[in-house]
Image (cartoon, rainbow, N blue to C red):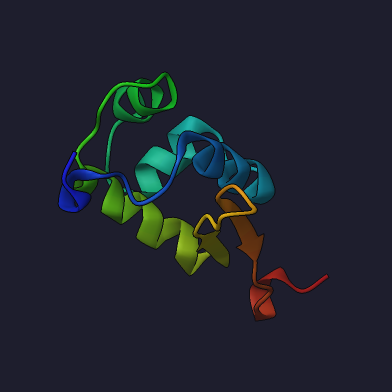
Length: 88
């Protein structure tokens, strides 16, 4: 698959990001301007074009999620950047 068609995050990263924010599929889909069916398909391993998932990535990043690229020693992951609205 060419890089421009690869999803902007992995299934595990999406699930971890949603879990970190306490977001269900509906809220994630709404924030990312896509359907819950599309996110379900992606999380179940179906191919979803990058252009469909980019708004989801942008919405999650706007909430403080940072998607970490894999290295030779670690799998891809996420980090959470606290901002004023997320401070505890």
